[in-house]
Image 1 (cartoon, one colour):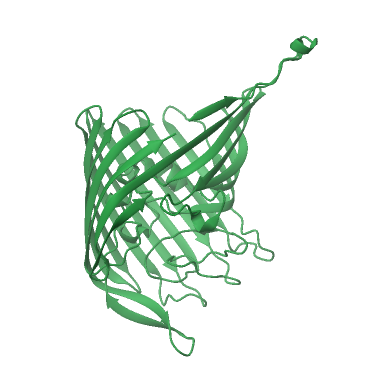
Image 2: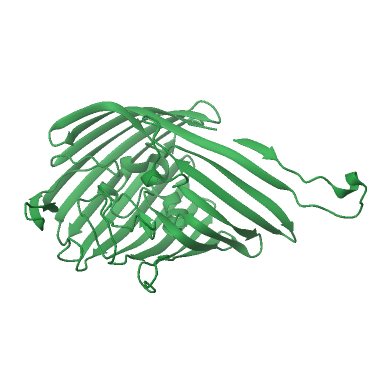
Length: 395
């Protein structure tokens, strides 16, 4: 990271003594993650070999800063851009700062309040002690239906993070629709609590979003339909083959414990997509997901790990998914590491997809469930394999 000190000149240097000025700092940072990869059954029976960006960590650059306001109070901000290294294109629907964009105040004894486009409390408090924190989608949820892989951000939000009370911390978020006449609709709210002390980490939280029916447009490849014109609520993708839903709720809990060089963890999620008159759903779609992982710090530079995820879907899609993943990460410097990861997924049951017929009507088609590893978004057959060998550099 490149850090620039923007310290105000003391008035004493200008001939006026006895007045202290606050100090500010701005940090420029970024991350690049690139790999050569192979996907079996990337589209039906087709195989794919190519370059894959943002695998263990999303490609990004950003600026963040603080200003000491005195009395233990600081002003803070962060602007973070996401992009595709292979194309140079903007991520998060083409937004300039689609990953994060917020400003706020923080105090050690009072906590932190921020406003803008932000991650929700489940991402902030729960994700960090799951297998996704280490190996991302390789050990993640099939289709990322519960935002296990942090695909989702929330716009127009106010967020509060409490101080750390001997390892205990809590967080709450509320998102406005920013649309006229939609009070009580198009809102998002979420809360989570975490306890991290020594080798033990525990966290749980809940997320709920209600989307206004008027003016919705479905984002391509996304189960959620956000009002893209006003940038209300949030964007995905959360890939499961649906076009829209009226509301989404996610409950998640996770635990992690370190025993010397070994770290063990488990998590559970329940995600539900409820229909309305404008959605393609015919019933509430429910997903129950359980995941476990184990990591071993083989040497100070080499981390190896493995994970297993089971997902059961009920509702329009009635299917079961099993996914296993393995990984190795070798750190060569403070900023650069090399990794090799692989995953296999098997799907069974039926999966509903929705298409538009010649009359312009939305029709449901039931098909055999398709495997789709994590949040990569490839629709395979009943099985799918993936191998990635890559480099990650932080600056």
